[in-house]
Length: 276
Length: 183
Image 1 (tube, chains in turn purple, red):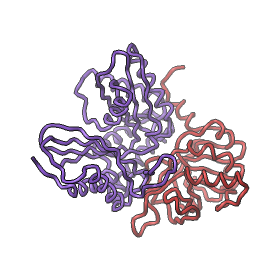
Image 2 (image 1 turned 60 degrees about the horizontal axis):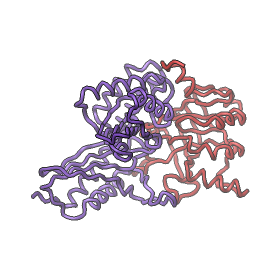
Image 3 (image 1 turned 30 degrees about the vertical axis):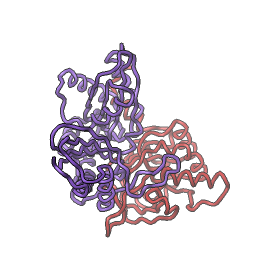
Image 4 (image 1 turned 180 degrees about the vertical axis):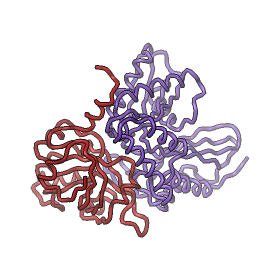
């Protein structure tokens, strides 16, 4: 058994949420650099260049990349040989509270969907816990803005639906998002499972690092190509780069259903993975 | 082109969808909750805390400022959520709105009718944009925190004209130009 103090978790989370809000990951910066080369629209090129400049300023000055510093979504993997001292949920939320205060990050969470009273500390986070074997403790953290979240959709397809029908739904979702969700987008797509499982997979897909299954990779590339035919472009001002990447996660499902969830992320895809 | 507030009719007349402008002067910030409050006052024929006539509203909720700074990161929020409140404000003389994302057909028509303009700031470029804000003070609804109404003074604030008084929509124009989808 490895014992971990809740305080250690809080401290790590506090630092991680600040880092995620101040620094874009290098892979994403490469994608933006690459997009500058691909983009044909001058307005679009300028938008992409200003996003790169914005990321540099945020990193140097330790200020948030986007004023929407999101609601924090955390996927925790906890080994069966880990024993947490104290309440894991409380430790995580204490870390978020500290990080959002120290980092001058916006508090964007309300206590109640109807009365809209701000919790003043950006908690609670949306937390998912997965049990694994071993003595590792991993936190995969996503800073999720609402502009792109609001444009996300789910559809329950017939089990006989074709890949083309699924693509049409994804394209329609991107068309509806248009300029609103801060393109170029990162697309998280969950296919299969149940209604809620597909949605969860689409969120998790945003954090996916690579695709092992070659047939899925081919499908991801095909969707990306189709999205980039829409002409929406960077900032929605028209152009060839509407999405930077498409990431799919799939899951077994019922003989009668084929759920497809599309979770859109803006170009400021802020995430960080830490292990304690 | 460089443009100074207030945006008078002859300045707005010259603006065309697709123009890149650098705005200097004063603008108000307001987003969802402030819009709701303003429109409740208008509905009840009560006095507003700010003068809407010839004003510019920037849809944003800034992050807190680090010590010694004017304001925190301050980029645009999605505009369509303000569409239901916009007709009442245009009627009161609102001249310009700054945000991101397409407006409804009704708002595009009202922008033309009221000789107003809709401008986009780059979504997600909040750190960069905050550098062009040289003064900020809360002028209404301080309890709304980030959603309070602020008076900002900006210098060369970079914007693109989306909807002009001629009924043009840059989002449609841009998309049509680069779309490879037939039909």
